[in-house]
Image (tube, rainbow, N blue to C red; front, side, top):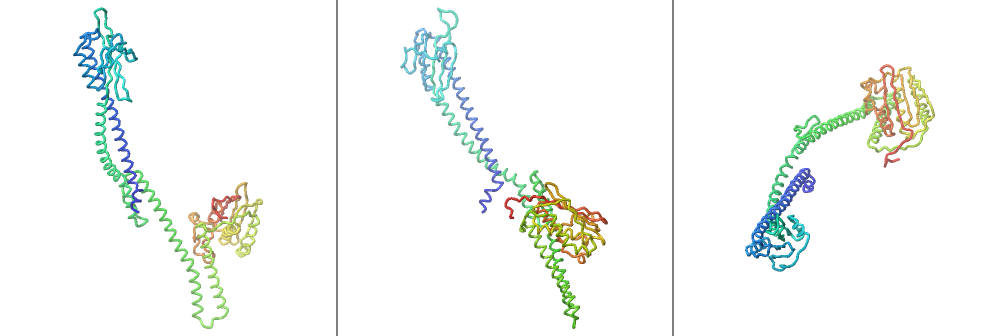
Length: 481
């Protein structure tokens, strides 16, 4: 569904990431501004209260308030300060007696606490009560007395002020900041959508260009805006090259299969038409034609059988039936079976076993693989000639070397001899026989056994195939026996 595709799109994820970054940044900025604003307001409020307390202290000193002289002006000033800050003001004299109280409940009482004592020593104290949203201040009033020399603390003014007004200002500022934050959020959504579209656009251009490609020879007509899009384009070109190779290989394979399968059929048709167009065909000629037809049918069947076996191997459908095999005995059986072909071709078949070797393998498939190599050495040899099979092993691998005295393989052809239907000498393929699939099956069989096969050849001197197989076959997880 389109909605699920959109939810999984890269554009949406870029949009959400940009939006989240913008919202988090705006919120951090907003909270920082509010916190600093509230703190600055409290500092300014405390400074203002300090100014008021200093003025009140000056009025008290001028009116000899601490010497017991009552002053309506001082009391009025204290009451105004108390009302304005929604708090309470106390005045303590040198004997720690409360001589003024804006609440009129503690006059005459003695007040001794830490704040009064520290203020009596000349310290101006400002403390914020977080739990009660209040500011507590202790302000010393310093002056001189006629009976004493030098300045001294005449008394202390204690103020307990509410911060509700500042809190109200902070709440109002918070409401305004929320409105600003909403505007920022709307702007962030718009900008994130715009930036997300701009950031994803190069990838969309690459995707559209890929959709427009109709052949393996066409390049992507796009500009690589990012390093990542350039990597995608380069990877596409690499993949396109590999697909072109596979497509060429597929077309060549189909062409080869068609040719190889049609050749025996064409021969059969020619032979059959020859018999049909002739009257009173001698029995000897009739038998000869029928033998040729039978040979072509066998050849067709051999091609189909080898082709199906190779396809099963490449698709993983041909399971190995691994068992511990006496390799020396296996080679003796192969050379004995190929003896008549070698004698007919005037080729000496030599088996040289350096030591007794036992290895884990599928004896049927490995017999076919080794037979293909030795049989090629016999067919593509000189007269007289030789094929030498040497078996050796160490503690981990067995090594089988198959050398011949044949005509050799051109260096340019050596990389292709394991390909399906590939023949070095195509002009004599019918006389030599075979399907062109033998070495391809051999290589696939050896790879299935976790082994390797290499070829070295010198024109006019011969060819050497080297097969290396592990003595112990290790299965993959889930592999069938």
